[in-house]
Length: 193
Ligand code: GRF
Image (tube, rainbow, N blue to C red; front, side, top):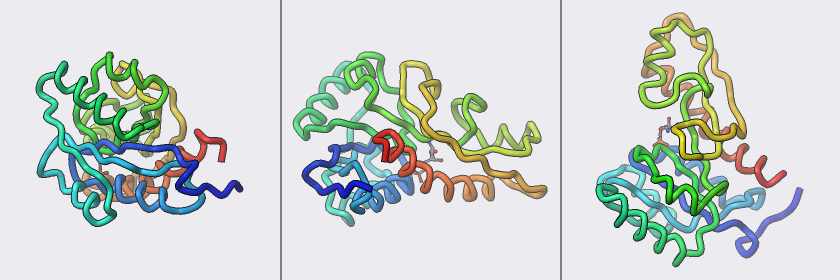
């Protein structure tokens, strides 16, 4: 396996809105010599996102962006990303919808993790809906982002069995554990590692 150092790693930004547990797992992964990426920037849609604390802990630059005005947001965000020479974007619990313009500018360079076995359960409340439909399995998916919600090309998926007495909370926790493993694996896969 190739040994990657800070110099030849792909400069990556992670976009978050909440807890940032996937961000944390990506940061840990990015610091190993197996990782093709180096996380240079954290973008949050909320100033109070818990995940922002990882910026401080791991000494990564962080920026909070007000996503209300699409045009201002696009221009500002693109300029921040360019200034930091960002080559790849990982969405990790990012709750805003990116504009078509933005996605086009970073075409093929944005990936996302979604807590369901896509194409099933796009959008919000995935676990609740899977339980309501009495699914036997759910899981998580890492996919490329295109302009349709949760519809880009799938990179990797992990199936998780739903147990008899499963609750939304227990399923969320079970799937999150798998998400933390799947996201790094999917990134390695993109780079053929
Ligand atoms: C994860 O379940 C992710 O799949 C979804 O939002 C959640 C974010 O969790 N898009 P965290 O902020 O990474 O802990």
